[in-house]
Length: 174
Image (cartoon, rainbow, N blue to C red; front, side, top):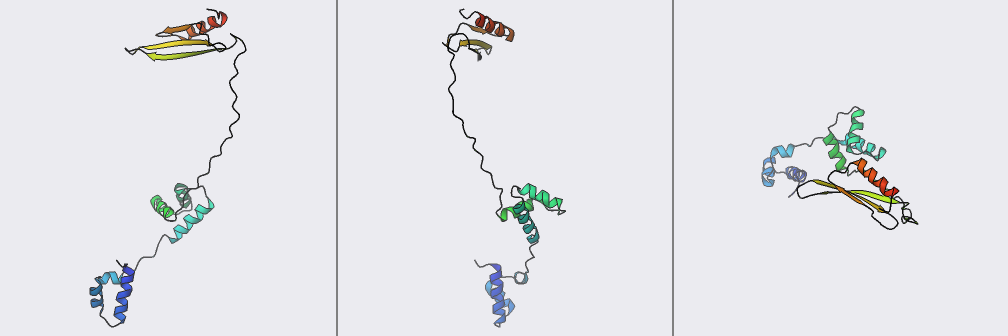
């Protein structure tokens, strides 16, 4: 398939060679209006140059910021038009590489030297088959993993957990 401008040039050659316009058009299968067609001037040339200039000046700006800058300059330009021209020029925002934070040397957790100075506690939640919530307070000695008490209840209030933790720390042999 030959393009329309190439066919126009061929018809003009035949006409200059002595053929009538009608015969040349009929032979190629082209209409007279297609022969006389004059393409419009590209109205985006100036806008394309301005978009390119803004993109080079502000490297981190994408389509949205460039269209905003154009509006601030007083140009009433549709966002989709700016987007299309931006894409035609194959512009894109350069993504910065993330800085990798150097990982410090990992230190193992210090274990206590004797029993009772460091205790850990945790509240574990579970549900029964009926849907009731069960809370379990677990207190553990970090030195020897000794669990003096487990408090299990449907509703363990915070004050009860505090009292239980204090009694375990004060009386660790329970």
